[in-house]
Each structure stands twice: as C-alpha cells, then as structure tokens.
Length: 409
Image 1 (tube, rainbow, N blue to C red):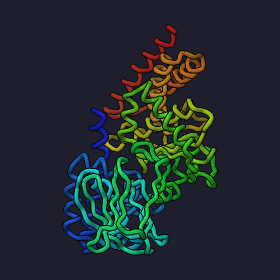
Image 2: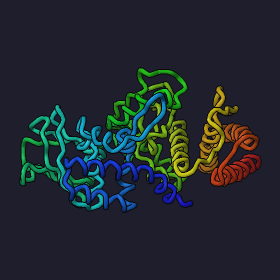
Image 3: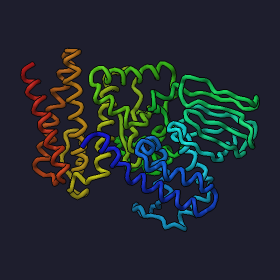
Image 4: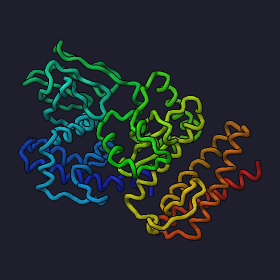
C-alpha cells in the first residue's frame, strides 16, 4: 500500500472516537449545533482528518472515551462519557483542537475559548500564546482561511495569521501575543507544551520502552535555544539531502520530535502517541542523533501498520532473544527491532556513498550482523499475518542487497 493509504487507514480508530465525542457533546447542548455539524462534515474530508490529528488530541480522545481498571481498558457508555465531558472544561478543551485545522483548511467556525487563570489563551498547534486582560474569561474565536480572529461581543480585538508571512494585528491594546518559533521545525514540534502528552507519559510510564528507571527527569523537555533549534533542523536537513523519500515520510506523518532532558533512554515511541517520537538530548553527537531520528520514526511508522493489521500473531507472553537487548523480548519487539534497523541499514548505505568514511562502513557492518540474527529469530519462530509476511520478505531482500554491497566495498 502507498504511504498515504497506510496513514489514513491508521487514523480510522481516531476518526471513530472523535465522532463518538462530538455526538456526546451534541447531547449536552453546550456547543451550537452549527459548530458540531461543521466539525462532523469536516472529519469526512481526508485532508482535514490528517490536519486535525495530533498526538495530544489522539490521547485526549482515548482518555475521554475509556477508563482503565486493573491494567485493562474499557469503553465508557454515552452517559459516562457525557459526565466526563462536563468536568474540567473538557468540552472547551476538545473543541479548541479544531481551531487551527479549520483555519488551515478555510473552514469557518465560531466557538468560545477560555483564557487560563494566568490570563493566556493557547490554541493547540498554534505557535502563539495570546495574553488577555482578564483571567478565566470566555472569548469568541472565529476561524477564516489562513486567519483566526478573537472577538469580544461583535468587536474583533485581534487577528492572528497562521502562516509566517504576516504579524498578528491587535485592535485592543490590552491584548498581546508571544511567538514561540524555536520550538518547531515546519509542522513538527520539538517540545510538548500540550499537558495531555505529559499526562499520557506519566500514566503509562511502566509500559514505555525505557531501559533505565529514571522517573525524575523522564518528562522534561530541554529549554530549547536557537542553537538547539538549528542543530535539530540540520539533522533533518541531512536526512533530506541523503534520503529525500524518507524525509518526506517523516515530515508528512511525524507531528512531534520531543527533545528530552534525560539520560534514561536514547529514544522511544509510545503506541498511545503515534506520530510522536522522544529523543534524549545529545548536542555533541550529530550522526547519532540523526540515526536515532530515523530509528524512532521507523518504529512510529510500524505502529501505524499495527493499527490496521496484527502483523505479529505470537502471544505477548512468548519471549525470544533480541540482538539489541539483553532481556528476552516478545516477537512484536523483535519484529520492531528488525524493521527499524533495516531502515538504519538503508540510511547508512546511502550515507556512505556520500561520505565514504570508515566509521560509517563499520557501523553498517555491525547493523547488518545484528539484522541477520534478528531475521533468523523471526524466520524460526514468528507467526505472521499476510501483511507481516510481505513486510518481512521485503526486509530480507533489502538486507541481502546491503550485505552484497558491503562485501564488494
């Protein structure tokens, strides 16, 4: 399947949850029918659905529609969902996620939004923080093509562009705005300002693929500087130069590359936050960081496939040797490792053609040796779906091709 087909199919559970929540909000009478009708119609447009997806909203939708008991997740019935929506400003928080995608897609919508107790309005995905003169006050937000306006009554007090070509315009001197541009590269965020992501990581800490137990600094972003921004931008630019097809995949589907202030891990992904990757900050090892971006984005990509197909049919309790871990791993973990390191082999092979230095060749040789071990484990013990078999056959072809190239250089 083409990349975009895979991505859109992986968003089906997300789409269903959003519709369930919107239908429940309609029962509360807290949001106008016109707004809710606009949102439901917009979700049927694939461009809009892709635009509205974010790791934070995905987890928020899961958190609103389910509850966890004894490690198992259960769906809430409609009355339980409505009760949850009516607490903690959850309806207003949920609707706020639609503001920027509506403006980007030229969809007109009017809704109220609440400034926080600090007197600020933060619209998810917008790189501006709006400072308001009154704390905890509702304001009317309107979306237009490439623009968001803030009203008090019928008076427009601010116009905020959603591109970088123009500056915000304020008709009311008591309102101001702060831009936080160094925390993003294009549409990819480098820090998670969305508190729902912190909540997800905290609530699911034990399930994360973190090898060291270091809860004290796991959830902290680095304080991003201009130099840090340029550093990670350069990592992505190197990928664009060496492997433009993979760069396109990353920038099309990854929404968050969170740069973490921790040594508890090199990098990890979380299946509750697809399209987000988490990296420890290593400002003095450019090639390691670039490889880690490629590696974690590969894990994220495979998780999209797991949403639409089981791929690995072995029981999670079955454990196997992994060339990348000291502990035994379920077959899904071995398969993930082989998938991700196959992409690393593809990266190193391309990198060596442009920068033929011994360290890159040596790294490729090690990765190929580890892949042979991982492929042997899958060949001997894996139970795979037809799609899982197809991907695995492609992996073997790629690895065999790289081994032959390595032997001739």
